[in-house]
Structures are given as C-alpha cells and as structure tokens.
Length: 177
Image (cartoon, one colour):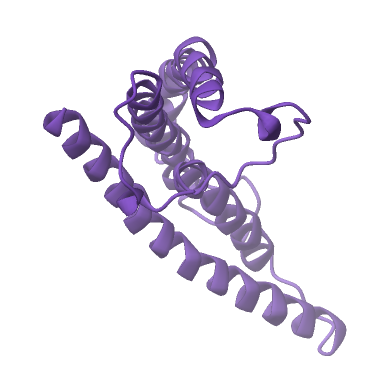
C-alpha cells in the first residue's frame, strides 16, 4: 500500500508542478490578448504572429493543464446522482470510469497522435501563414504529452478509488477534494 501511495504522490506532485507552470502561461495569454486588442483598436495594426500565439498558448493551457484539473476534480460534471452518493459509491464510479473510459481514451489519443506529432517534428512544421509562428510542431507535441498527464492522473485517481473501495482510504494529504 505504501508503494501505491508513493505512486499517487509522485503523479499528484507532477501535475501540481505542471499546473503551476500553466497558471503562469495563463497570465501570459491574458497579456498577449490585451496587447493584441490595444494594437488592433488603438493603433489599427494586427500581426499574424500575435493572433497565432494567442491560440497556441490557449491550446497549451488546456492540453497541459487538464491533468491538474483532474487532480483538483475541476472538470465540468453534470451529474445529479453522483453528488448524492456515498464516497464508496463515488469511488466505484470513478474506478470504472478510469478503467473503461479514461485509460482507453487517453491511450487512443496518445497512439493516434504520435505519428501526427512525429511528422510535424520531422519537417519542423510551422505556420503556413506569412508572419506566423514557425514552431507549430512544439504545440503538436503537447497533444500526447497532455494526454499522458491525464492518463497518469487517471491512474492516480484509479488507485485512490480502489483504496476507497477496499476501505483503505488515503489521508487528506493529497488535497484534491
């Protein structure tokens, strides 16, 4: 059981660390959008690079921050039944969801995006637009990386759910709930 706790702590710490980095990128995207708006409406100028940078940063935030969001249980959940269930029943739903949906879904996206990312890196893919960002391959690499973080966090959630099911609940030190 100590080994499983160590795995969960490591995964949780990794996604917490990545989440902190992503929070700074969120600040940067706000500044980039602000500068873009000022340039557009006050100086009547716009740059393709800045517009692409906005959506590159936005994509990075969502791809790399999703594992941390899962850690914090922050994904949107429209469920009128789940919230009324006992912790053990919630653990069963989480465990089944991780095993049958999250792990296979992440695996499929990681595997299918790998060739896509490999090709982008192979040709050092950039923007097709003049003045665009020349490093599009870096953003594409975030697809499998982000889903790997979600997969790892799903494994942590699965372990914690399993521990709750068997009556060996983790202490509150994980802090995600």
